[in-house]
View 1 (tube, helix red, strand yellow):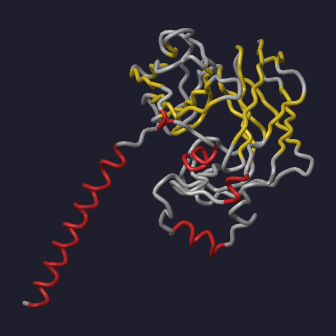
View 2 (cartoon, rainbow, N blue to C red):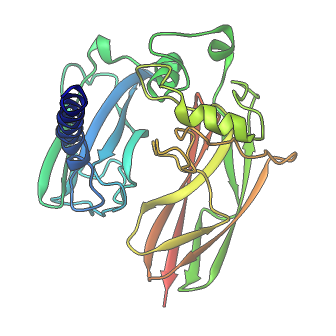
Length: 310
């Protein structure tokens, strides 16, 4: 009797545990999508400029893990009031992209709102930007929000850090043909801060520990280390970058080529600071390519336009 009762009880407990896990995990998985979802525009904050104007900072959350939708400037992608085109992207990388671009407003902007409207996959969303004091951003806020620091923390090293500087050598506007390789030579300068948190190798024991370790902070975590990333900012059509570069978006999957992935290693930095990247376009059109140098805490952007013909 005792043995039968124990077995029956064990089976019941196992069934209840399985049902509980299913109830917990199903909603989580149901909120993850490869494609077909909308893009949420985001106001990240503002900072003052030396000339008295203000820079309003924007990013977005693409709810898709794979789809990179396009929304041309117009009724599906515009700012108001004023000019619809404020330099926003029309091509959206997957998932969360913070501090993607800035819009400058004059010193007399006052308490007005600047609104970014996006309609992707039939869903319209808006981001409302204001100069309220609680949205003021500095370098420590950027480093904290992007995961370089823990929430609300700082250090002498992080306070001393200044953004890297990325410079594209050659013409900023180029012409190419479909299938033709465009060579980008980019120089990146950095002050070496913050220092990389990770050595340049992953041993088997380290991999096991990192895969099993719980998150160490409540905010998104990021591995510090200088890297350059090139991506499409505007333009439809597949574009290939060779060699593949780290992702500037928060791909938190363990083995992702992203500083937000647990097993990511900062790439080696060329001694002369020169990065050579080849770009190939599969479709004609006008493209704006976006280069970002990121040291883990702060960033700097550069852009190049390529007109691609058949």
